[in-house]
Image (cartoon, rainbow, N blue to C red; front, side, top):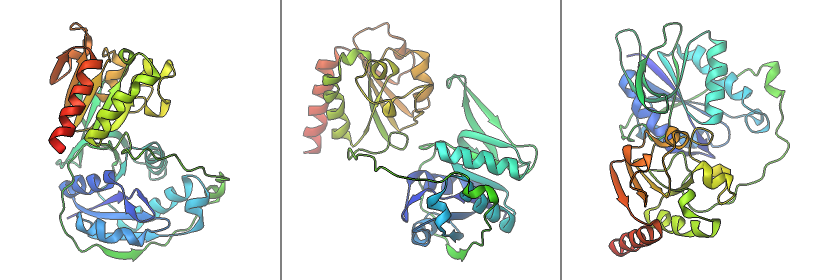
Length: 320
């Protein structure tokens, strides 16, 4: 069976969930070979093997931490040349998509971004994508070269499938451009204790109907009761009620959680573009004619200031 390269997103050896999803998808089209780079790369091996990696290629060098993107592209290209894979899978983060695009240019291959599913085809892997603000679904395959495919987080359930996970050192020669952009400082992001918005299994979002920054506390309370991330519509962000980093929509972040709860959000196309692929959508809005209700699996017509706290209390009582 052909091998499939999977780029590993990890933090000091802790593998992030989107990578485990990639391993699940990779097994549909071949044998996953993971590529882990930077500090803690070897520490990822046990987790990767547990989820199907037959081999783990590792490399560590100061360049991966001290410079932006290009050293990682150099390493992934080295892995590509060593393995000759049937496909290369990369998480659809901002950095992941840049790495994938640069690799595709180098190896003269086609690229598919933001796939939400992957299956084997007679002429190579077939990727499913959402188009036109998720109003349509398309199936695509790369017709030239080795497919480079980025996959959205939460596109697949994580499935354990123990494999050998043999660790091999990856020899990397860095290009002249690898040191072109140096990282001069880092500021740790303040932790809220909540999951990352793009990776969360549950997202609770507030919009114009929240009617003020001080009222986002009820959205946060529901999110915390569910172990969810907090999102916001563009209207709420533009009003200064919540940070732009939490904006869900066409000009914000795209999310695809198992459960999306929209509170006080009308459902404009700008917002729908960022959350329409969520598996289950629940809306709370006092306007029964709000466009969001055309999209949802479950809708509650009511004042969010009554409904959301009641829902939070119910969740907490059941947990208790």
